[in-house]
Image (cartoon, rainbow, N blue to C red; front, side):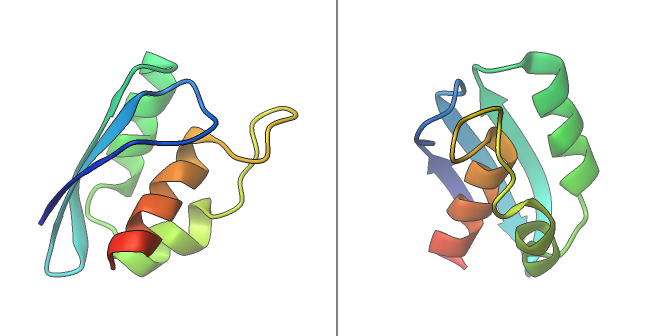
Length: 80
């Protein structure tokens, strides 16, 4: 399953997610902090969806109520 998620309250403009059999196969952020977001995508690759949600849910960025990792968790929660 491929998801194109529009994040809210962060610098990135879109998160493209590919999940197969409950495993994250690929994550690509459009916009935002390029190196950090590539790192997040690389770290979650091969992880179970529920493990990604557990690790990234509610992470904050500065004074914001969310972050790019948190928005990935929100996207996964909405779709799985």
